[in-house]
Length: 463
Ligand code: F0G
Image 1 (cartoon, rainbow, N blue to C red):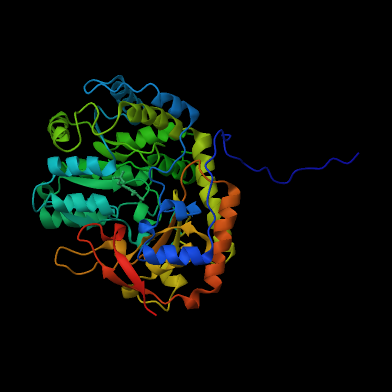
Image 2: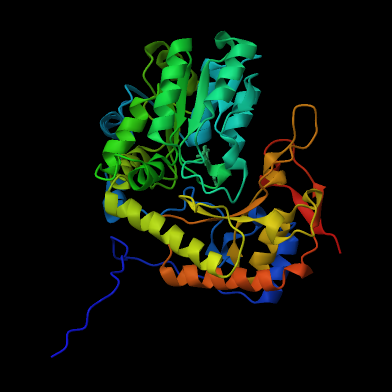
């Protein structure tokens, strides 16, 4: 009897589903009314009016049964909660940082770090800006300088490590301002605003050598460090046989400290921390945390949140978890590529980034092409995405708009939440919007908040 041979072996999620949350499907008329009421800003939509929510991968992950069980072990003491010590143990074991300051989320850590380390007039180089990170640097009197490689600003450049730091740009800043003016370099793993692009160990090692020579610290934004490690394992020579956990540990060992939004890779709905090796900075941060977050053994979190985070950190480093997580992102990205949709390449770690300048070449950047496209996708299918372009970039200190080269719509995939069928529905919707793209005319801004305007700005359609 002839044997059938399987040509291809599929992968599947390394979990099964124990509880489901029902979704509401709306009509195009309802969605048009909802987006108008939300001022054409997907941040202002009600979640119950959204079908598939790709606004962010932040705090939107599904926790495991082990994490939910951890919630029941919350020790809600004001001081010295058992869960704090469990979290401290996890941070030391998996990331290697000596001292831990828990915070309510990433920006809480950014605030404390910036206040401890930045003096007015200091220069803070970084591999591309992130909205909250740069704002806290600026509020502390610092000046952000982008030192990412040029390739990162080109949506189609296939460089495997578009998150890399351009060492020549760092050297030029040291030469111009002097090393004393640069308290640290902020290095993000994977770079959110570049499309979820990783940095290589080789680059980080070279940066370590350079910064050591000048007495400059490296502070990691380790929000998506496990996803970065996956790309190193897949793409960097010599790492194919290393575990995600080992690579993550090595990344951290090349830095002096880190801010973490645990709402992403660490698989929790709320939480973050500052990890640091320097005792003096730690002591100052531990003092400041009581001003802004809460006592240094809870930092604005419930004991149960810290327990879920400790467990999430460990689960986030499982090789099968991260392969399936990024596998799903790549699945969606390849579907969009097949439909001819212009996306940032290579496909990044936490989502797909549509190039709105290429999708809507007839809409000038001053009319917010990415904002308009995110609204149009929502009206088509109830899929909620996010603008990452001129609105997110905001204004400079002198009031002028930043004009970022990348004008993107982000389809961020929450971890362990949606199925492959959801990915198919998303791809079909975007292909449909692409066929009808000429109908999208752009927007004008009718309300602009002072800080982080993308969250609350309101728009109206041009026509
Ligand atoms: N750093 C990076 C790279 C981030 O992506 C975020 C949040 C933060 C810091 C701030 O952390 O939200 O916990 O205060 N990014 C979310 C997003 C908001 O949707 O990309 P947070």
